[in-house]
Image (cartoon, rainbow, N blue to C red; front, side, top):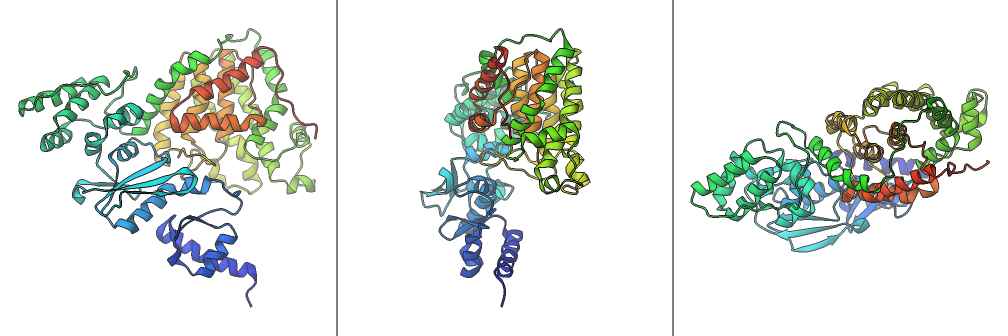
Length: 518
């Protein structure tokens, strides 16, 4: 007779086969009731709606959203294909956002289908699916991305509501920057007789510095006998110029976010003291901050490290080969890696204290921080040597976040653009806040992004003469909530105010957050 573990292994094999065959959406009919109930009881399966499930991890706490947010788009693709076959499409607005590289999980996903029922299906964690009964253009006039059926870029721009231009300006501008010349757009405008929409799009392109395309639209529509008025659908004009030669929408998106978020940061961040006159004294204070910084930064990431372990790692008495406690403690690798990375970060700070360009120093050194952070885990056999090679080669998800970081191909486009922005930025507070935020928004590594983001933040602190600042683990919830508002809602002010509050305390002479004695 099979043991409980053997039975569970059998069920997991069934689940593994289904995941390989159809991705994240599992129907109740795809496996027997016995396998389904066993997987549910052991936390390997989660119900989405009646008759539909997604794979999950048993170590997630009850009610946690990570599995759902990670599975959302793959689930939607499979579920909608099962419901409607090939005859469906996401809304023009959602199509436009995905073309623009915005994969944030929406509160409500709008779908068009001839067999749609004009109703809302509630999904986990406050999300929903709104299906609209609607005719669709022929299949040849639709496109596909990651298994999702979308309207093509030009059609989505034409059909998107005027309100979307106001509420999602970053998405719209990023999508418009992908239009290199207007022939396809003009053909669709003329075929549909869309004179009012032509006026809106002409105004949008002119607002974005693409006057030549705006003139093409107005002159061609006028030549075809249409009368219309050019209207700017945006409420502001971007200071950043987006090149139509830039193939990646992610690069333009990051440029737009940086420009949009600069002023709110400048408004709330304290004035920079300027480079310290005594670099040696500044570096001594950074060195003295190590224990507090390591304890709080690692604790924010969920590692269970003790101050005593941190001190033994720092003092060189940590010895996993001779000490059973160290050998059994996975977290010791994280502590050792943090210590090694901290030493390299101090060298980077020494460079900016000599007035080297902080963005250039960060670009030069951040890979070394990463390698040192994870080298002990490679030595211990917990990671492969290839894991130190560089930016990630897989998709990554952020625990409990609706923000979906950039795909692996986009990371390689976005990181050079990010460092260009950081290098060219002249405001110290903007470098501190957006240096941290945009780095974790891109999420270039499989692990360690938060720790490296805070190292990057403190390198920028040094460049402005601000003191080394620690995010207390006791304020983790506020910290993560502020990052979520910036990532999902493009509202950087809460995050800027959060960091500004910590910096003001340090400038006023308050000590670093305390560390427990044991």
